[in-house]
Structures are given as C-alpha cells and as structure tokens.
Amino acid sequence: MTTIYKDGEFVEENWIRVDAETGSAIEGDALVPQTLFLEAANDYLARNGKTAVLVEAGDNVELLQPYLDNLTYVAVDFPSFADGRGFSAARVLREQIGFQGDIRAAGKYILDQVPLARRCGVSSFEITKPEVLKALKAGEWPEVTKYLQPVGTVDEIPFGTRPWARRSFRDVAVAAE
Image (cartoon, rainbow, N blue to C red; front, side, top):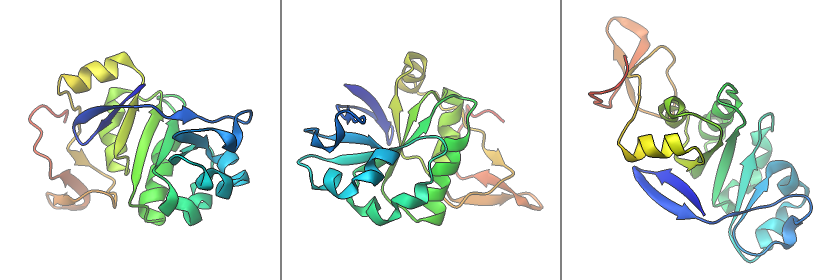
C-alpha cells in the first residue's frame, strides 16, 4: 500500500509497478514506465485493470498524448530532490499538451517542493518519505507566495508595479516569503 496525498486528504492505493519481466500480462492496477508502455500501449490498455504511466527523468512526455484519455493518471518521477526534470514534465503535460487528468509526483522530492510541484500541474503525491507524510499530516505547507515566473496552471495576480512579478491567490499565514 502506498500513501497518496490529493486535495488535502490521504488515501491508500495499491498499484503494481510493471517492469520488463512482468510486462502487459500483469493483473490488477498497473503503473507502467513510459518506455515499456509505448512498446505495447494497446496491450496495456486492453488489460483487465486500470493503467497509469510513470514518466521517468528524460522521457519525452509528448509521446503519451494519443493515450492520455485512457490513463488513470500520469506519475512523474523525481529521482532526486535536486533533479528538476519532473517539474518540466508536469508543465509540458498541463500547459503544452493540455492534459486535464491526475499528474502524480513520485520519487525523492522533499516537502519544500510540494507547493512548487502543484504550481507546475501536479495534482497528487505518492508519499514515500516519512518526514513528508508527517509534515503534511501536521498541516505544513511551505509555500512561497510571491513568484517571478508565472505559470499557466494556477491563477495568480500581478504583484505591485512589476508586470512580470506574480502573487498567489492563496492566503497562507505561515508561508515562507
């Protein structure tokens, strides 16, 4: 079981991670790496069970566009808290491809990256780090409310007289400034 954080709530889910050995013959809800999925997309989608795709760092998410309507969610891997390619993949899915479904952060992100991932289009989080789970359960949300780079996934308003500066609509009393 894996703990998922979405819309301020925690749920437990049990997705089977597919590898080259198990392939599309797997039973149940399957999380398939993008490279394997693209090799046999129709086989994975025709199975009995839900299908989601794991976009790993460096994958071209645009190749998923024809299949997005048939996926339960797209997971974006963060192989390290220092690797920002997951943010880029989420933004491409939301802003360039127009994917409206669930984008899930997976991997080794840290709590401080959760609000930034939300700004980039991530809508749920697979939590594997106990410290992230503990902080979110305690209501911690370390959002910075002033930005220099606007994004197309959230509503923001201009901040002051600088048209390129943005301010979040969120009223977060404990946000870092």
